[in-house]
Image (tube, rainbow, N blue to C red):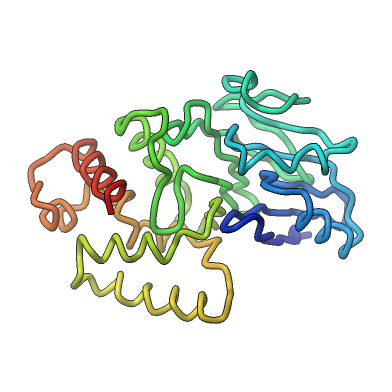
Length: 253
């Protein structure tokens, strides 16, 4: 039986995600920005939280946990356990766990922070990437290096193209404006912009997206794309250097 998937808007522009298995009556939460909206969604559906998966330690991904955890199993990165809320299960890259009856792979996607992890459910087709790979963007490098983040993005880019990318924020409109500042005549960007604008005009989240769409349009996944390299004046540069330049420009956009 397929999982029920719910996107929960939180705070000003965060997203949390709920997964529910009707057969086992298990419910998992990915990140806990604030308790209120998540608890309201759980109560509305009559779901009891059994697992909480934390991607990284930033307050806007963990501050709602105390109001939600109850008897749920809380899962997070072993390498960042000292900065995360108390964990029931510490995980590292290469580990596989079971959540809502589905296998979940752990990827280290350090860059935005050190110890940031992604949860990948190949069978169900989801990747919970939080502030590593985002819709039309990637997280600012608060702790990691461009080389680390590019390596992390390559890990995610290697997933099946149909993977649903569940990222942590509604930043897509601004990310798109930045991408178009690099490649104003890119037809795929122009097309996606119209879709993003239409969604936001209706108040509909632009998250999640699909990996296939991100691979075509997200400049941070395209640091080895000759067209992007040409557009920013670095046709012969190493992808890490291209990524670093794109990230620098976004930081100042």
